[in-house]
Image 1 (tube, helix red, strand yellow):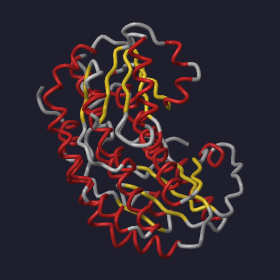
Image 2 (tube, rainbow, N blue to C red; image 1 turned 135 degrees about the vertical axis):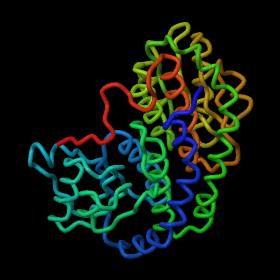
Image 3 (cartoon, rainbow, N blue to C red; image 1 turned 45 degrees about the vertical axis):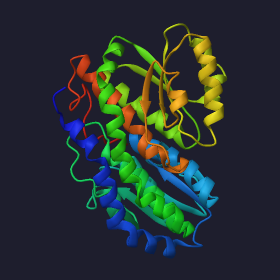
Length: 346
């Protein structure tokens, strides 16, 4: 497979994450200190890939910072002009471009109501960055491929850095500062099996399952498959999947399962056995060598990663799947049909 802009940017992710962490460590520490005691919960405004980062934040800040995290409904602010009461909120906007008017409108209203505001963006001169009281730049460099990759993982890393700084937890921060090495190691496990993705070029649909911290990963992988290969990929929590959608599974139905070791592992293990009984076509992203053997297509990631950091690593095989499927179907992975790099919604 010839190199593409998308492939280059996938490979740039470890360096981009490390650059963001090193560059923003002091800034984020200062932000956390200045915000201390000024909020009771976190409200996040985001769209698309950034919304998937927000799903990660719900588990991250809930588990480690004991904060309730809510996802904003931007249309209430931009179209209905009926903003809710934001009392007690730290309002966070996540947007790679920082250009979307509906996301900016949430922070504008938050500022009007006297709430602290924070932006995570790759463009420090964007409307979102200019609106927010505090800014965490992503330092990802220009992302030329339309599908977001390095701006997604740097967004996850920025959220993780903020969480560690709010908690003032040095052990967690040390694990975070070393995550780029694990991301780099992931490439060595995935690249040898890329050719085997060819067998899925004719699939029309698939399910992508995750839970806990990797609920976000399921959504992001499904998004990458849809936008790059035009395949209908439906993301689910493994718990929600059992509440109805599992009835759609029949012999040969493709299911991508994100299941690194951690609290959710046993639940996902039981689900894999259930899907095997249904003769589903199973693709497994995991650091467990035994469960990988049960997969029709194993997608290994390195071991020894704390569960709360696995989303930065587990998404990489999914990015590769989307890219490879696009190439196998004769599509341009850098320029998906009908999409633009900057999407502005009102």
